[in-house]
Image (tube, rainbow, N blue to C red; front, side, top):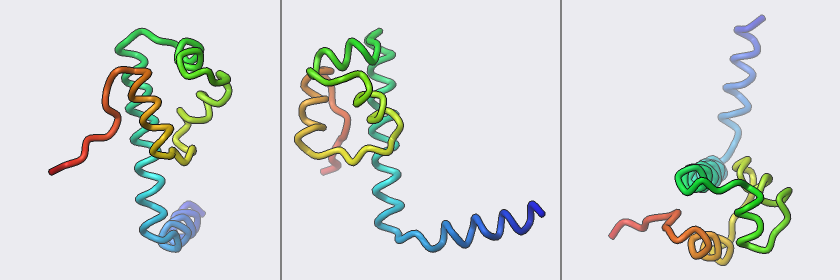
Length: 90
């Protein structure tokens, strides 16, 4: 049975467009970076939510990696945390 499940998983994964995979990866990386910065600065999700005037439940959603961050939101987060989340190679 595991072989069938693995084959089904691979088929489902192969059906996802590459740009969508890239989008998911970026979202998870941003969420992971936010979590790292919060930990390094000893901030809780509640502290972070207060800095951004957001509900803690919204911050929790962001940290799952399933949130579609806008450039405006990323800029607000970077400002609130005092660090870059995304570095653009030149």
